[in-house]
Structure formats: structure tokens, C-alpha cells
Amino acid sequence: MRRLAAALRREVTVQYRSHFYWVSLALVAFWIAVLSQFEVTGFAGAELLVAALAMVNLLSTTFMFVAGLVLLERVEGSFAALVVTPLQPWQSLAVKVLTLSLLAAAETLAIVLVATRGGADLAPLVAGLVLAGATLTCFGVVAVARYDSLNRFFVPSLVWMVVLTLPIFALFLPVLKPALIVHPLTPGLTLILSGLSETSGTALLTGGAGAVVWLAVAGVWGQSAFRRMGLRDAGN
Image (cartoon, rainbow, N blue to C red; front, side, top):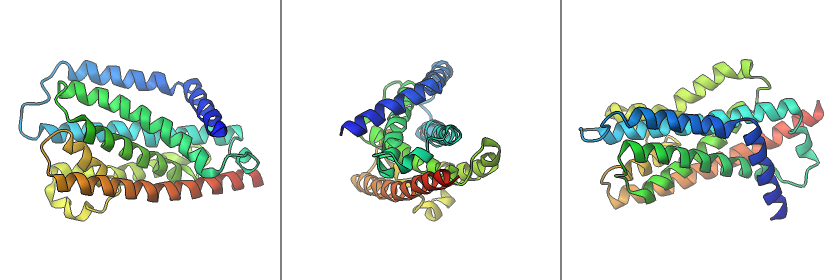
């Protein structure tokens, strides 16, 4: 527990020094300023628009943040040290997932509450934000694992982001929904929508169970990517 606590403190320090929290605060301030000028709710399909905004914001504060953080640490040689550190790869991944998913969830919750004027069911909403954010963080680690510079990662990152945001398109194009039912972010999006509109108990259960399963899958994949990066960088 002490090692994990120390790793968490180090992670927060690195994120602070990388100005992640200032960027997060700027994003929240921007969206609050914009959304406070408009009546986002009150029209048919408003919850779909808010859910889409929530997912896009989650993506920026998890997938993109963790990719940038990993690239920075690889340049500094941090991943080579994973081979000799007492922390296991899953623990190193866990501190990134925990810090970034909670940051993204808090940031996005503030935006959603402003957009809905506080009219949201917090339990499924927060659960969806945290689980989807954690899954996106793991996928960010997987996506960046093969690259050692932002220039090389830029084009592949666009492909990843398009694939990861497919459920957002399905919100407005229902014909896509059957094909995306097994998409990793569909369960999390279901929970978010449950917090924005009336949803059946079955949808809540399937959304929650699916989000947990996909987080476990992404976590195992992310842990493997972490281990490979550590071994590869140590070999260099």
C-alpha cells in the first residue's frame, strides 16, 4: 500500500508539472462559459447531444492525456526503470488509470451538470463517466505503446479516436447501433445516457456489467503494453 501511495503521489506530481490540471481547468471553464449561454436541454434529443459532449471530453482527458504522459516518460527513461522498480506493471498502470479517470469524470461531470442545469441522475452518470474514462485510459496506453514520438503517433492516434468514438455516431444514426452493441464504450455510454434520461433497469444492469467487463479486458491489454514498453526501453 505504501508503494502504491508513493506511486500515486509521484503520478499526481508528474501530471501537475506537465500542466494537465491547468489544461483540465481551462477545458471546464471554456465549456461552462459556452454552455451557460445556451439552453442545451428542453428539446428532443438533447440528452444525446450532452452524452456525445461527455464522451468527447472524456476522450481528451484520458486517451490523449495518458498518451502524452507515456511519451514524455519514455523520453525521460521512466519506462526503462520499470524493470527494476518494486511496482508491478499493473500497479503502474493502475495509478494512471485512477488519477486520469477520476480527473476526467470530475471535469466532465461539472460540464454535464452545467449543460443540464443540474438535472441528472448522478449514480449512473458518475459510474458511466468513471468506467468509460478508465477504459479509455487503458486504450490510450495500448495505442501509444508502439511509438516513441508524437510525430509517429499522430496519425495512428486519429484512427484510434475515430474507432473509439463510433458509439457517438450511433447516437444520431440508430442504424449503426446493432453493429456497435459490443463496442468497448457502448456500455459506458449507456450508463451516461441513463443518468440523463429515463432508462430501464435492464439497460442499467447490462450497461454496468458490460462496462466492467470491457474495463477488465482493456486493463489486461494495457498491463501487457506497459510490460513490453518497460522491457523494450530497458533493452535500449
